[in-house]
Image 1 (cartoon, helix red, strand yellow):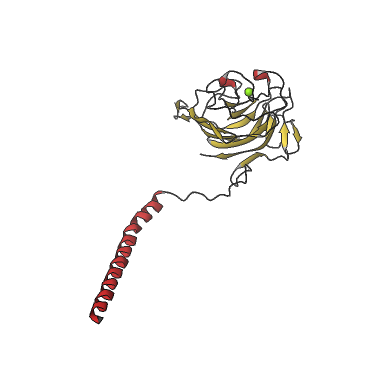
Image 2: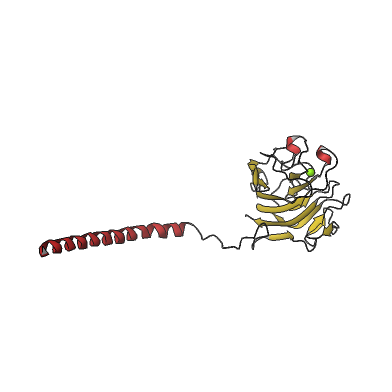
Length: 250
Ligand code: MG
């Protein structure tokens, strides 16, 4: 009886020792792999994410509701669009504005609200967000308002219709979140790879990493390795904008 119990305890101890040894071997075996992973990648920077859609800590803020200091008209004059609450409002006929900070590849965030609906097609709530002043992500009141697909809201104007129409109605705040990778150029300035753009409209994927075919109409400058600003189009409609920022991806 006693000897049987001793054997049982002995077997348990042996089993424990095997499990313990296996754990040590597994741990030791995993160590070089873990170290290799840590060496292969630099640790991603730690940032503080924004709440809702406010700017994260590493963003360059272009408009936070307080002033238009980061903006000029495209001829360099100080921007004279109006500020109403936390929004800037297009002053129709005064001209498009561009940001003073410029960027190459970037993540861009912007919010907009279209004015009360009147007019049809391209005449209703028209503006545009020009990435680098070169590529227009169309802004339009596309809520129950038909137009040509490559000219509706969230189209890359004249190049790509959006995958879906995710528009909200007039006066409602809408969001654009864009991931833009600038075209690549060789040392002679010849383009070797097109730029790409991904767009989320109100959090919905509307442009899925499409290749830009070149600049869109109304552009500030031609494609080049030079960085460009964000440009907001005065198309004669009292569009509202707020909470505009970008993060460089170079
Ligand atoms: Mg437009």
